[in-house]
Amino acid sequence: MRTFLFDMDGTIVDSLADIAASMNHILAGYGLPTHPVDAYRLMVGEGAASLVERALPRDREDLRVDALAKYQARYRTEMLASSRPYDGVVAMLDALVARGDRLGIVTNKPQPAADEIASRLFRSGLFAVIVGDGEARPRKPHPAPALHAAEAVGSRPGECLFVGDTAIDMETARAAGMTSVGVLWGFRDRAELEGAHAQHVVTVPDEILAL
Image (cartoon, rainbow, N blue to C red):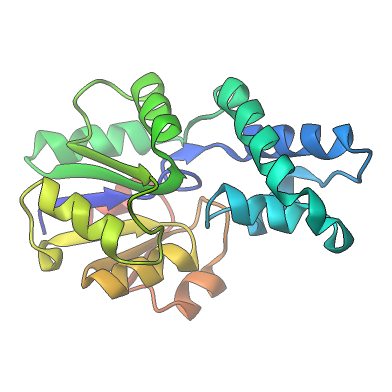
């Protein structure tokens, strides 16, 4: 195991507050009820379209397209207002690289946003590949993004650990033939990760070094 592929939101970056603030801004603009920040823990993970669908009231599906466009525009300007790497993550990533491991990001966040967040919050060259949501490829839990990342760094799926905080990430790992690692500092809990058959569950970033 010499390649570590990481989800972004809830795994290496604590971005929940910025996601919630952007979506609540859009909801308030329509005069609709907003949601507590913690409620967004269960809304994220499957891309912006799914987030918008879950945040809107069930009787306002007519707003989906407009709300998605407005959310994406708002989040693009606010996505780094308070987002930061989780405590211990940078040291863990540096330690992996120092021992010769290859790192990548596989996220359902749009590619431009994933690239910018990675470049602003982490040092240049830390990640050998960043795979975000793009028009030409499916999103997680489809294995294509993870397999593309593995190929880009010259690794076979069986040589990769896929690290994430949601069932979507565990399903992605299983579909891609990679070892799944669930983290407990993110957006979801142990029950979800174990229910999605996580092969490893870690409580702090340093535990990843021992896998």
